Amino acid sequence: MAAYLGEFLGTALLVLLGDGICANVNLNKSGFKGGGLVIITLGWGLAVMLPAMIFSGICAASYNPALTIALCIDGTLPWSICAGYIIAEMLGGFVGAVLVWITFKPQFDATEDGALTRGCFCTAPSARNIPYNILQEAIATFWLVFAIKGLGNLGAIDGGVGKFLVGAIIVSCGMSFGGLTGYAMNPARDTAPRIAYAVLPIKGKVDADWGYAIVPIVGPIIGAIVAVLLFSVIPWA
Image: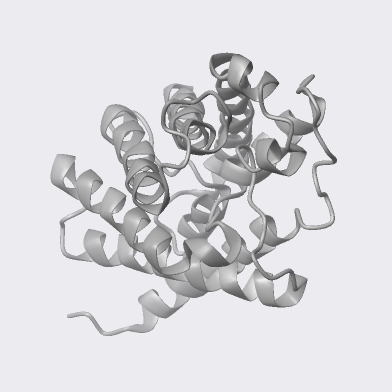
């Protein structure tokens, strides 16, 4: 239960900090409005790094159903914890998104652009093409998971330095792929907040764009699985 609690709290904190960045730089009456790419990418890296540092002693610090599934496939994690981890991660993502809305409610109330408020919770493509968007998410997530596995192979993933490097991977993915699909790379970071957006009484909100929601689910799962399978056949030693 401690591991599930760690995944829940870690994912909630990740989404609170990460979606908080989006709210901070996009919503009206925010002092950081217009903060731009650098704040977003660095902030998301920290949003992943800090929960990993805090809770990795009691859980795998996956905070990502796609990564959890991939790590179960390659034997890093046992299948017995897979469903519990995913449930904890999705619940954490939902709670984190609700906390973002509570924290920034005056700013949400001052922002009439529904697509902008939705973007504080979930991703959207710059060029909408669902099959290609899935491929873009798969490629971004492939790099995320392959790099994490590579750091672990070197023994660099253990301890605080390893968690700092994971944050650097997120920054790298944001800098390289963020302009395509918003680099969700994680259903708990996108689908769970998308559900929160759909049910919260947000002023002037639009639909949650469920037609696109398959992208940040299927793409990350494909990319994560391909990453661990490729990693497992490379003769590292």
